[in-house]
Each structure stands twice: as structure tokens, then as C-alpha cells.
Length: 532
Image (cartoon, rainbow, N blue to C red; front, side):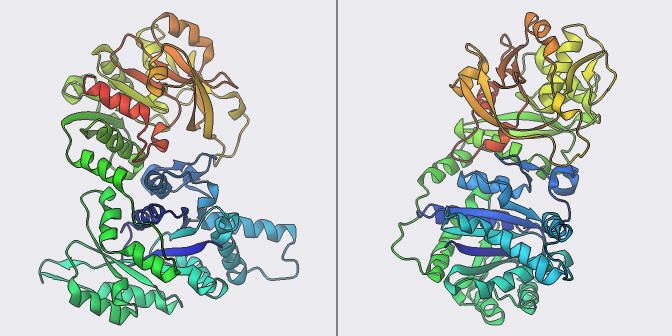
């Protein structure tokens, strides 16, 4: 049976439980173990698919079409292993399943309650991946902070599992904050003590405490935390603020976190950590030979997490090209005809981000026109691709009222239109074209040369598509479709062959870019911005 590690957080949110889980999983994976990570989120939404990015950041999409928490992106980028709908569970999913069972009569005659029915379903979901015999270790990240009311059923489920799992297969790691008070010039351990005390009050004793801190703890503070939180001295792990998230696995290795976990689980004779490729990536990231600036045109730029996979993809592609990629975030609503040259003229490339709705559309179209007319490398994803099609229709084909039916239902020239199968759908959640779909690439195209393959798969999240009624008109005037879905003939990629680099894709390539396998489209775009 798989062994289970539960990761909780205390004192404050945004400490980096996802990065901790991904980093530990990477260390264990590098020692020859099969590892996966799952996230349990306390919000009542079934998934983050209907949330505004300002609410919860990016909605990450898996191969099997699950709309999930953004931490699953970190899991995949660190491990290079696909996740699925089973790797992200919300309170909404738990309650929905229990209520469905109640309606079917599965609990006939019984009062349905949080304990045992909700906590039983949480435990079933927590153990589900372990029943597949695919993994040696499963890390489970619990969203929120210990003490939050909405997280209590998850903590209670962890408590109960202590008595259901063999002792050597169960572990709790608690991530907490040791703040530095500049006025006192001192690190304070009291918040950590209170956080662990809170966790203990629910019947859960952590085996390992990881302390997020901006200064070294020192032996005295480590001993104090160990004594008052009832853990071994060696089980107090220092997690200093890192230069990049990709330093975290190596920093935790220095603290011997993987050794401590393996010892507690009873593992022996495993190979040592092999992070050679990781170190090559880090060297290229930290010591670039060149530097470029790419403008990211979007409407959620105030929150970095809204485009987190895109930013990370540029980091991966930059390292691949031994280049530092500076991403200048530009709000599409701030772009107008009067400031185009001032805002965009010095950029090495222009990237137009995905999104939904009317807001900021005019600025995106102006930015794309500027890139096309000034031979500046352009890359558009999902809505960015659709806006490139609309811009071309307006300014090259002369279809001045061209638009998407998402923005204007009665447009006389719907060059972007809702997919036929989407037109009868009423519910918003989980009903878009989601997950991995095939794409066939035309010969002698930019896309084919970038991928070096004829058939590929990419992940999607959209309802609208290129309207094939206009395809011939586009291709006769210089914008071609270079990628199609082989089953539906939907246009997946458009490009302008006589441009320095002008590519738009309907899918989301950023969702498949990893540290050791940067996405070829991002790599090619960065190379074009370098003048290659």
C-alpha cells in the first residue's frame, strides 16, 4: 500500500504549501520512488472553473479535462508527471457526492452529518490514489490555514486516518511561519507554537515542522520549537526564503528533509538524490547570456497568480535559450491609439494572454495590430489567438464589424463563433471544451517546424472557435491555419508565414511546460524575440 504524507499550514496563508509538497515530492522522486500529490481545497465551489482569476488565481486544466487549483500546475512542473481530476478535491465535491447518495437513499433511515458521512467521504477521496498501486508515496496538501472553520472536516479526516492506516504509512508535515520583527531584531517562535497547539487541539500531532523564515533559525530556536511542539530536533526544518521557487528542493535537501521522511517511513538502501538536470536548469536560469523584454497584454495583470503558468513557461523557455526573460505586465485597458508606440515600441515581443469577456478587448486588438504591422514577434493563446483573427479580419480583410459572438452576438461577420456542441449547454461549470485534444500540423509551416512532429496533443479550455466559413478568405490574404483537430476540423493554430514570428493557438501550451521539458512554442517565441 502507498504511504501518505499530509501537508497542513499555519499562522498565515500563502506560505507555500504547494511548493513545499512539490519540492519534497521531487526529492523523493529523484530517489527512485513513484510519487504524486493531491490538493484538498475547503471552498464550496465544485472546482475553480467558474471563479474570476482575481478570486483564486489561474484555473489549471489537467489532461483529462479537470479544472483545478493552480497548485496542480506546480506539481506537474516539478515532477513532470500528469495529474488528473482525482488530484484536486473541494468541499463542494465532497458535499455533492454525499448529498447525491442521500437522494438515492444510500443512507436510508439515518441522519446525514458532517461526522461520519462528510469525513468518511473525505477519507475515501484521500486514499483513492493509493488504491491504484501506481504510487509509493502520496502527498496530500490541505488548503487554507489550521484554525479556519472550513478546513475542520479535513483536519478531522486526517485525525481519523491515523487510526486506520499503519503507523509506518502515515505522516503529517506542518508548514508554519517564524516571523522576524525588525523593531526587536528577533525571530519569534510563538506563532509556530500556537499554530501547532491549534493542530494538536484537533487531535493531530505533526511529525515534521517546516518553518518558513527570512533568517536562519539557529540551534536554540530549533530546540525551542522541537521541545514546545513535541517533535524531534531533527524534525524541525528550516525553510529560508529562496531566490526562486526552483531553489526550494535543493534547500530542503540541505536540511535533509527527504532523509528524515524516508527514515520515518522505514525506507533503506534507496539511491541518493539525483538533481543533475535540475542543476543545469538552475545554472542557466541564474546565469543567462542574454536578456529580452516581452510585453504580456492581459486584463488580470494585478494578480501574478492569474497567469502563473505563463510566467513559469517563460522562465523555462528563457533558461532553455540561456536568456533572462523580463515579462512586462501591461493592462489591455490601458492601451490606446495614442500610447501604442510608447507602451509597446521598445518590447522584444508581444504576448496576448487568454481570458473571457468584453473588457480590455480593444487594447488587445491594438497591441496585435502593432505587432503585425511592425514585424514584432507575436504569440497569442486562446483568446489571444481569437483576437489576432479579429484584428486580421478588421484591418486586412476589410471586415470592419468582424467580431466574436462572445462579445457581440449579432455581429455580421462572426469570424469567431461558439462551437456547435456548446450552443445547447446551460450550466457554466465544467462544460467547456476541456482537456487534451489531438492536433494535426500542416507541412511547411512554422508550427510544424517548431514541434518537429505531424501529430500533437494540447490542453484546451474554451467555448468559441475560428469560424471555418472564413478560412479561405484568411488564407488568400496571408493568415493560414497550420493546425487542425483531425476529428472535428477545428482550427487550432493560425500563423502569418511572412512575418518574423506571428502565431496564435486556441489551446493552452503553458499547461504542459515543465522545468525539464520547456514547451516548444514558448522556446521558439523567445528565440524569435532574441532575433533567432
